Length: 121
Ligand SMILES: [Zn+2]
Image 1: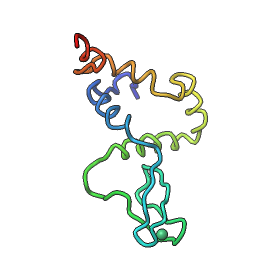
Image 2: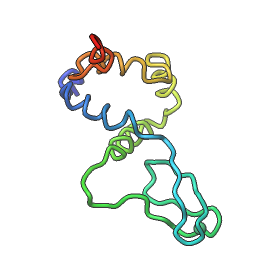
Image 3: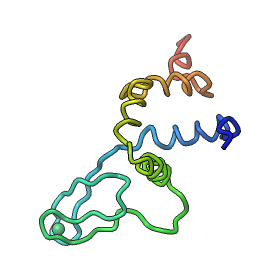
């Protein structure tokens, strides 16, 4: 396999970045049965209520791809190796655990610069 031939456009990657950047890793939802507030992982499709056990559908199938699907795809790729902790460690070495590198990469060519728009006021 020629790995150098596998490319996606900068715009495509930036689109994923923009969709993923504000997505929380975990969120909460109220159980429609007993009103208990449950925490769930945002890539989950179903959450089981910790209090009454009711299964709650978190987002729909067939509504078109969501950014959560991109995350699941990447996790599948990582898990397929059987060496997920090695991959995560290598990633941490390069990118750390925050958004800094990505913000720097995609932040410079924004159409709007909030910092400069207030200049001259
Ligand atoms: Zn419940």
